Amino acid sequence: MNKIKDILITGFALFSMFFGAGNLILPPFLGFNAGPDWFLVTIGFVITAVVIPILGIIAHAKLQGTMYDFGKKVSPIFSIIFCILVYAICIILPAPRTASVTHEMAIAPFFDTSGLLTSSIYFLLVFIFVMNRSKVLDLLGKYLTPIIIVILLAIIGVAIFLPAEAMLPSKLKTPVVDGLMEGYQTFDALAAMVVGAVLIISINLNSTQSFAEKRQLIFKAGLVAGFGLFVIYTGLILSGSVHNTEFPAHITRPELLLALGNKTLGSAGATLLSILIALACFTTAVGIITGTADYFKGLFNNSEQAYTLTAIIGSLLGVVMGQFEVGFIIDIAIPALMFIYPITIILILLNTLPDQWASSLVFRGVVITAFIFSIPDFLKILMPSDNLTAVIDVIPLGQFNLGWLIPSLVIFCFLNIFKYFNPSTAS
Image 1 (cartoon, rainbow, N blue to C red):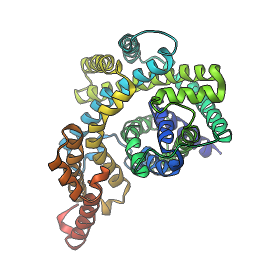
Image 2 (cartoon, rainbow, N blue to C red):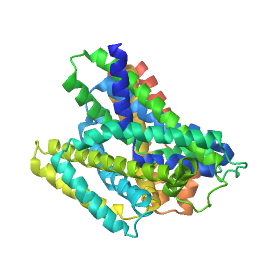
Image 3 (cartoon, one colour):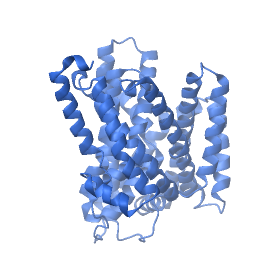
Image 4 (tube, one colour):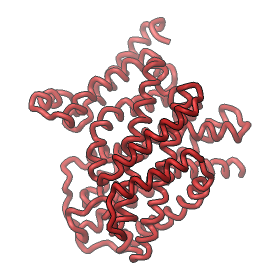
């Protein structure tokens, strides 16, 4: 019984770490645009927003180290650079997005103030909490997530069982691929590497279990968290689809979630949801900047100055970026995600495989291949051209922004066959 209790407690804690408020605005909008194709977009979204992140937790269960361990088989320098890039992306994009979501869902509907004022006050408070590491956040996280889940399940239940009389056709040409790409915007694959390391540290501080016992605990807790994410995401996508005739075509992601809350729970329920999501946004921002500051503190020999400077830079970036609309932040995140996500997915998948299939040679070859073939997708967003489109069209799945996938799989198979016949070439 104690083991089941530990699994559930750890699983719920892990779920709350993934449970970013920004993620909640993505699924309903995806369903809104998908209409009758909601099931297809759900498949794509679940792959990149649930399956890959939970595989990241399973990889952590195998490694039981830090984010650095994910890339060390490529090279120590690569792993350090990768970690810096991940943390930099997190404080530049998802952390400021929490301020933007807060403004659009909890401030703008009630007060006629600017996004800059909201982001300035918001990240001043974030900086204070990061520097003081207040236990208030732990209390908020402990009670906040269950309340939001109850409200969301109520919205989902009412929305599904009282659908609109009609449904608009899908606006998406490739629903599964659109779901995959929208799943990138949750940042959950990156979060898996970050929060998984936090989970390992927490378990090590509070447990005397063996390596194998901790591996089983993390593995099963990951499945619990994954099931929770699957239920919420699927329910929100379906809710957006069955009510897509009832809201204007130009509605934004935050507006849609609020509108669904208002329709199903009334204005009081929608208001409560917006306040709770604002608080959840705040805890997410503090967690991101604290984690980033901790990393750079460790990188510079536990320097408190490095921690403070990182917290200041992260908060200032939050003020600058957080004043923009959520849609704008989501759009400018696309190039960064096209660049970092293929490498992140490859590292997660390779670290879940048995060691005999994931030698250092395989790691280097597959990561380099994924990096090279993700460059066209990255450049296509920054500076589209006919010549670049022609190159992308030649690459298998290139037109779907997945040009890195087949080449990486081919190199993975080739290097493992090569290693099988030349066992002395790679460890």
